Image (cartoon, rainbow, N blue to C red; front, side, top):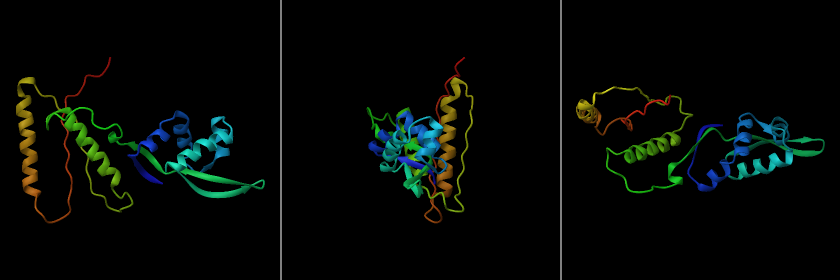
Length: 183
């Protein structure tokens, strides 16, 4: 089972985005037959099989074994991945980007990061990566100073490690105003 399956085909998204299929997919985190899933969801095996067949056709579920039960061949299925990411490209861009300081640019950047991460070989024994997240409070009159400092620091890193030798890494930094939590 893969860790992540990146869905960039509209047919896959259409297949996945049905509440009953999502629940069946959750049940198939472990190998199960349609009969077993049906019993857990209080459904008929035929109804579950219908949905499982659609999930298999979309590449979201895999037939991993067959067994004979009371003279009938029964499939054992498992979800293809633990997580399913929907590509924002499924909807496509609505409107134009507003430059590298706009929220549209951040959305494009996050989509690129999402696609890059989904394409990584997670079976590799050593996958060097780092994630850092946090909140910073900046007084309104110092916002531009903060953004300039951030840009300068990152440009320094790019200059220091921007040679042509060694392993290539992508670096994506997103800085955006944090919304206030709902009360």
